[in-house]
Image: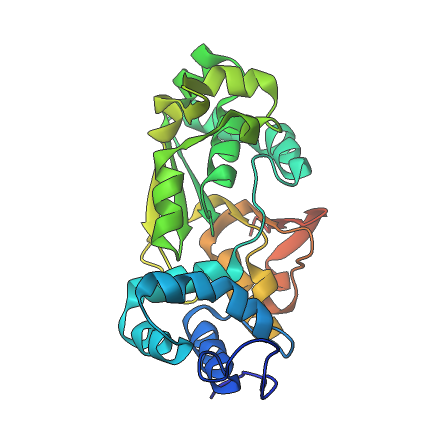
Length: 289
């Protein structure tokens, strides 16, 4: 059943033959079904502004014809979902998460890797990769020699997103130098390589990440559990029941004592609280039992 809220019958300056209330309702239904996104009343102009470039690029003359394409083309649906959910992302966003990870999680993880044990991390909703590389650079630390030794352990990070084009940028791992200004300079010096006016993430870091297209609301093919999950500023688009189901799945996907980091405006509620306890602002830890 669609959760869409009807848009106004007309939108200022836009012909209803190009984009109508029915088109908004159809996009809302697709977004909710595919990715749990709720497009509430008042979002009709946002939908138009975010999707109009894709409509033009697709060669479709109207939103109605573009919606027909969305229903048939999974890759195009992914691009549309990404356009609807894109928010400002950057390196070392919510820096207190990386400080907490460095102080409270990294030492134990390094010790386990040194004993030959495995460590698994997940950047869920990794977008264009800034979170992924921030986390891995923090884990490897400012000492290049020590970091390369850490990288040779049984260490992997899964970076997943619904939008394939965002994953392509993340995997390319090349950014404008000014985009990394928030990263502590010792980490930038240790783990990036100049490339013209850009910086590329260094090969030892890149070798640790595995990029996969994944709908968080669908089936998860991963068999093992994770020591750390970052899922930040993704659930802001979901209704509360969807959030609670997703966080409960994250809790189950963590090892005992594992860590979950969520966005600054997100909170854990519902059944997941049986397993997760707050360990700081938007940081949660799974019980050891």
